[in-house]
Image 1 (tube, rainbow, N blue to C red):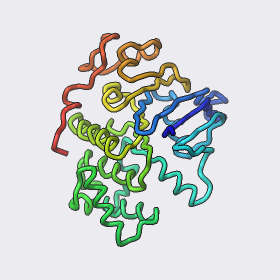
Image 2 (cartoon, helix red, strand yellow):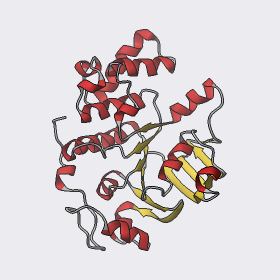
Image 3 (tube, rainbow, N blue to C red):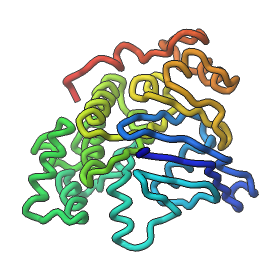
Image 4 (cartoon, rainbow, N blue to C red):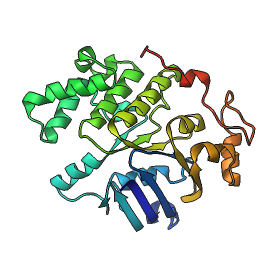
Length: 276
């Protein structure tokens, strides 16, 4: 069973685009336990795909399936919303979008657990277990988000996303706001969690080095259409679409720019660090 499958999906926002399709016949799949990179410039359709998968927007056409369940817009009713949340969660670029600034991170995770039927007596213990899984402890559990470093906040946001036991995580530029050394820690954490929990990832990013480091396959989007799709290293080393070549030519300094060289992350981003 595939973790995510989009078959011929389209999306039109009539008022915002004058009828132009934000997505046009998009098909892609993420196998269970696999990681797929979604690459493209602003306006390419990446966020629209995320909204459709999360049930925030209905597709205008095509079929959307998550963990064997067909998705058709916003889940109706509390039970349906909870069941959908257990299938898929998102980690944003800014952890403040996931964390209440007035609520200690441990309390935020406990509230999520209790919403999903974990009894109060076990919620604190489970919250601390989740925080430990992402490298945080009781001190961080009792802290407000503003008292934590950027890397710690992102780890707390990941723990909160994991609280409901999802099979799929959407990672929306999830390391873009972090320093390079902290990015390394979080990327390694994603790889460790994927191996330990069997998670599937849809990694939305413009950073090609990050895509290579954490994904098996990649899809390149342009103006709502898939222009290239294949194994990540092969796609980045030997692109066939002129648009992908343009993206490769625009990558930051410090990453190989020659068209047929493999794209690799800067050494600092691939080195395990113990600071946070």
